[in-house]
Length: 390
Ligand code: MG
Image (tube, rainbow, N blue to C red; front, side):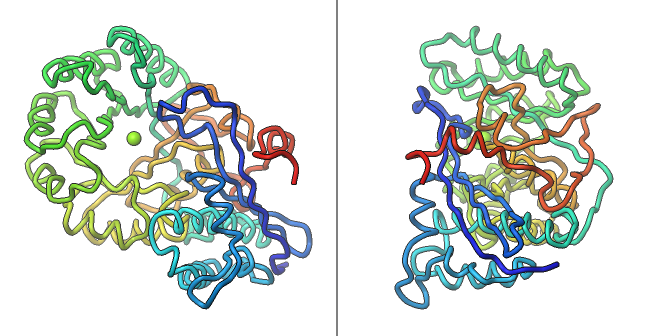
């Protein structure tokens, strides 16, 4: 039943991209595929530059603290997921430990959960301790793209259309991305947020993403105070990411939950956000923070501190599926970000894996199948593989 890993493939993928000056995470990915001695596979991905992640995972071993992650997994037992996380972390602590090195290990950890689940015949959330809820609650991100010459009225028209799409698809929680930057004053931004709330009606859960608009926490607070009557669930990316002191001041005076840590890697970095940044919600990405093993540890750390975890996720269906397994297993997660392939037209998001979950009246079922419960579409892999067939 359990069998050792025989092969580690690191596959960089990209679609033709004319929007490198926008913020679409679905234009590329790097997939890790593990294969065991019986031919069973497990897949994972990292939301980081594919060529860099491939180089990191396939680097030759230099010494004990700088080993090849891919080589280290050959012959390993995939069911020992947490022990392997520790071995990988220690074996790459010289070049890794934070940032890109941890993003790379995230893809391996996700693939290990998939393979181990496939070997044991159980879904990944059972490997994470089991289901703590009966249904899942995603939120749909609403993003018209950066202005790139369009007026704010044109952007609001796209937002209104995406709101309608999301509600028609069954979502009952959305996040309005108000990345309008210099196109609007703070006072105009307040009016646009109120307009967004009016479009949605009162019963839809609404969150906001400001795209790191402010450098001064007073300015952020000025806007949050004025939209407090809009019943906003959280405020994301208000201040600069590494301004933890500013976040602490804002979080302690804001009428709305202040978020942080979407770029964070490991529980050690998230701990800073909790202890120093004082945020109400942390948003690490499962394909960047250290995988399913690390996000579960982060959720347990957060539960001890009265902090919520609502993971960032803007990649392919692999990461989207990770959000489901995570929320199934972790009570500290009231929502998870879900990029719908029906709202964003990206072939990598839409076609790389299947099946795609349904949303009904705001909720999704627990994932079915074993491991992650999704299949990689090999034809899509070949079509978008960077550099063609190896
Ligand atoms: Mg965001």
